[in-house]
Image (cartoon, rainbow, N blue to C red; front, top):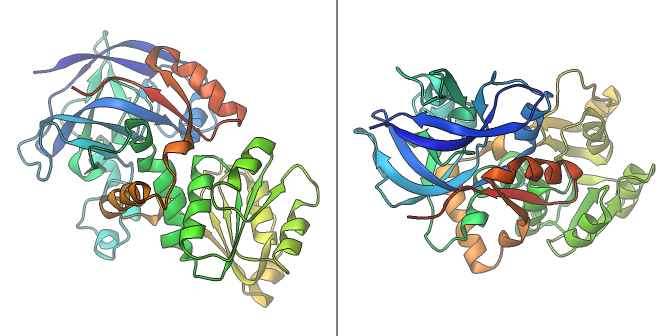
Length: 370
């Protein structure tokens, strides 16, 4: 039984989201139908809207980090039942390819098949045209059809707005520190870009036992808040000597620098902040055409490393419940990451707030729990 739902659709890029009625299909055997409660607004969504990225051609329903309740499950679904509160993660995995078997699920070669390939469109508009859900999720809608390997059950007592940022911002920032870079106790860390991902990375570095955590951003209010989230020092990135300041504060450079902006320039800065033997980890999505300025001699003579990190190199079926438990224990502050909330009708205003750089994480309230 197909259902009619409201969704914010991107019909052209660059453009704005338009709220319209769509028809959502029934679950395929391995799919779960979710009633969406909250969805996080991510910079990757913003870049689809402004035309910086064009990974999925319009018309599309954006939104890949959401929380909601299970409405219906497909005939082959295991581990989910109607009423379960769930969170999505775009790093779906097949569990059988070489990367999955090596434990590197974020590199799954079959993700595209799980996200998009099915016999009928998940969503269609009033004209009968297929509307693609971004990353096989499409969270800016009243309901979403998601493969079971793109979902995880979360505790009922997690605040819905908080849960909505677990699937991307928190998973990426925490995972980059704990999985990709494997920060060790006593090491020094710098985090460039203090949005939801950056604030999660700050806290992960503290949890990992870093002796010094330096937050770097251009927004003074975020720098002040960073000191509440685990930063021992902050540096204003508007200062032309910001890199030198980080190196001075860390007595020659940090062991780990994390880039959460998605710019070739800031990646180069992250690399320059390192001490010999240090590692720079890129968490932000860098548009094509950006050049990264690094000194080749530092790669060889100083054994510095530059590495990418997709979605925190996560194992989200384990990680997300663990982060929710850390939040319950009070050792991880997630509730305060959400600093602005909009609804489906005002979601374009939400993206303007996100683009301003003043907010940590912006979310959209889509519906309520049944």
